[in-house]
Structure formats: structure tokens, C-alpha cells
Length: 330
Image 1: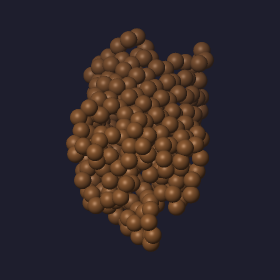
Image 2 (image 1 turned 135 degrees about the vertical axis):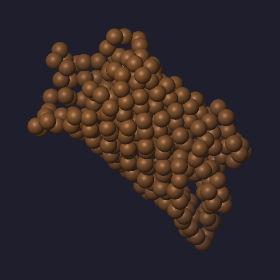
Image 3 (image 1 turned 180 degrees about the horizontal axis):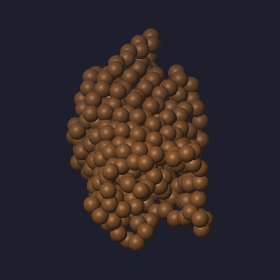
Image 4 (image 1 turned 30 degrees about the vertical axis):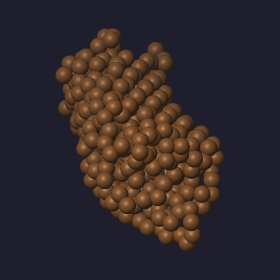
């Protein structure tokens, strides 16, 4: 129910976000938003963390269907805490469109469930002769269903549902073997792993008139069952932000949102991990956004910009990611 992004890797990394959103009747949007046969890798944790605002958290029984679109273009080489020459990285570009179809349903004020089905469309270009000359850049494009996520939601700690936890699994439904001569296991649409997902969230009003609200979220993703001797790195993501509820244009509620997201990812491991020493990262991302609500319909959009990042080795990163989510509550 909470989520965000993360898509990085050994020689290529970037923010993703197979992002998602959840809305409940009488609430604002629930957005799930804070990535060749050579030794290249991406360790793409795309969709591992979908973060949202305080308003996306449950306020009562009901359901929401949503469709999300995320986009990123990983073109910049990064090493440690700064940019690096593109010649240091055999991978040249990873451009991805992420589509997410989801359903969240709260059976009552305490218990609920969420299902997310992602579909990815990816372009990948890499130098198959790297690091030796002459350069030989090859590219490929493919698409398919990604790893499906199923989560339970519990919000029964207090009467106002201000605190809750999520728990679930990520299933290995995505293709993890497309063109393996060119695409490493950590650049596939699917990771091949079954992951345990654990999360928590809290919200509170900052002002007595409820015009300003504060929210905080956390989510941990840990692979527990793996395939083909590849274990993606664990991921821990934290988000905090504020939003303002005092804007209206006729019957449309307009909610500006500001959030900061910290994303930590461990190193890959296993015999088929492209390069464990060049996987893993730490990132701080700022994400301003706007939400529009009209009756049972909601639209959310934001841009996510990294301001601090540290990568092990050389990885590709995207300078920004954009997100659009449309939802209907019932």
C-alpha cells in the first residue's frame, strides 16, 4: 500500500519506480511511487518501493482501482558520490516505461489487501566488447509482465487509522531470461526471486485545522527464494513529507505535496550476479507533486530528482523520473 521506486545496478542504476497508487473513498490518493554477456549489471530493484503521501493511507472500508505510468531514462554514469565518464561503463542506456494496474480493498477499518500487476517496456544498449576496443554497442527492446506484488494491510492500532503496517510477497512472475547473451540477470524485467515485503506508515495533522499534514513511511524488501544462482540485493526505503489541503478550484481538490525519499540497497550475490562489488547504492531523492481529486476520481503526478547518491562501482542513473497515476474509488 505504500511504495516508490528504485532501479539501479552494478554498471547501471536509476530511479524507478514501477510506481503505484491507492485511493480510498473519502480519502486522497494513495501513490506507490519512492532499475550482455560481459560483466555488466543493473541490479534493478524497480518497483521495490512505492511511496506516497499521508492522504494515500486508509481512512475506512472501501476499494480503489488505479493505473500508474512511470518513466525513466538511465543515461548518466555515476561512481561513488559523483558523476563519472561514460567511457568507464559498458552500458550506455536503459530507458523504461512502467505501467501498473492495481487494486486495493479495505474490508473494514483494520484489514485490507492490495495487488499490483506491473508491465514494463524497456530499451537497453550496451557495449559487448567493453572494456576492450573496438566499441560494439548493441541494443534490444522488450516488454512483458513484471513481478506481481500482493500485500496485506493492518490499520487497527488507533481509531483514526493514523498508523499501520503492510506485509506481503513479491512473486517471480516476470521474465528473468530474456536474451541472456546480452541482458544480465539484474537488468531483466523479472528478478526470479520471491521476496518478503514489510512496511509501516504514520500520519498526523500539523495544524489544528488539518490544512497541513505530515506523513512518514518505511518498506523493506528481502529476497528469500532465488533462481539461477542470482540473489538481488535487499532494499530499505524511507519517505517523509508534508502536504497542504487548502486549495480548491470549483469542485476539484488540489493538494500540493513535498516529500524526501531515502533508498538503501545491498549488494547482489550469487554465481550469476554480474558484479556484486559494483552493485548497491544509497540515495536521497526530492519529489514535489500535485494531486487532483474530483468526487471518486483522482489524478496524481510528480517528478523525482536525486540530490545525493552514492553507488558502488560505475552505474547508470537517471537524472529524474516522472510519474502519473489515475484512480477511481468505490
